[in-house]
Length: 533
Image 1 (tube, rainbow, N blue to C red):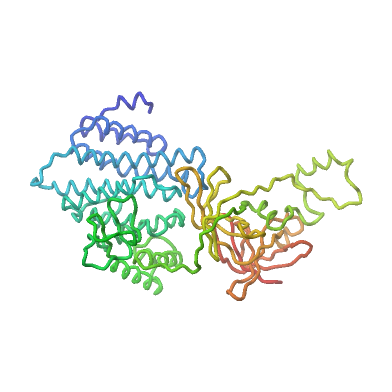
Image 2 (cartoon, rainbow, N blue to C red; image 1 turned 30 degrees about the vertical axis):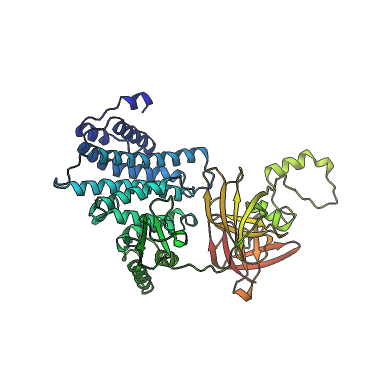
């Protein structure tokens, strides 16, 4: 719909709005998104009566949720910075959630105060719940896109919660069909769910895990109590300050008992998580426990990660982190990483390798310069880029790096080769924490793979293809018995088959290795234990 049509759209009564929503082109999410934005713009520009506005917004929730989840496929699990089209889709989704929140807030302002009228408190509780919900969707969308939160977003959320407290409707039951068709919720639960998602380290999770964390946070948030901080109580480890643009945080900076400080009681939540973990270990499936259609091992691992933050226990680091200053060199992509790890370009190690059309054209063009007595080698005219990142801090098993300027796109779980600021050799690591800043810079947390890597060329020993299959670049990590690490190969995804035999070339040495089992699988690599043949 054009801008001119958008301006002319006017919703004056319930029938007009319902007829418009009935004509949404949901089979084409891009078109439906534009239709919904025009609809919300019309409601915000010339709102109908509060009762009609509320009814139309409630009818808009389901189609908007469907459309935005479809459009989010364009940028979920993508490398950052996003491409132009991905960035446009992200901004459109955030704009949609903001407009819904503004529309519900407008409805609350237009609603005439009639405290004694039947259903008034329930109506206001629902409106504030929706304001919290859609402010939370802005937050969640930033997490799922690995983007830094916009300034003021937590103050908005705290403001809606505090208003619900002041009006005495923070625990008033509210129906939310998008979250549950059987159980009621309330403003406090919607608010707590977002605090729980934030303390679960959202920038260190894939969209798949974030969706699971959100599901569990919503389901279990009613178990968490929210109360003011009393002066005669012991200061809890974590608090929320309603006048600060921060989520749940360490209470060390709080002085005395301030009226805007709230504490969370997560004792019942901790017991619930322990109970769920025990049931999973007793062979109950996640679907039986209402935890989603996921494998038991995946759900169990994720729940074990959530026990400490969701019970507000201090999470002791395995390795101490040190603040650092310096510059690290970083390479991505198997071929560039092979060059920086090995010091030589990757090339087919045998003279009988099959050459591409481009190779043959090069040979034909420059055949008069070839030395007949020299081994035929086609050297790729490739660039092996390296980027320079600032070292923020480091520990024995990883780094926190920052980059302010433009550079290679980075995906959560991506394999990277890094030469530390205080070292000379490249190590392998992968992105376990990733966030794009408001300014466009990137911050990445790298977990290093154990051992000094060696660049290898590998191909399958399958009898049908061994003689003709071209080699690929990979890495060999040594066995480290002191810390229980097996010898392993780091390969591009799709190369693992249990019991598969590989021919591996390391410099002038050729070895035969058998793939054993997967040790780690991430966005663009697999780490596989191997045994010698």
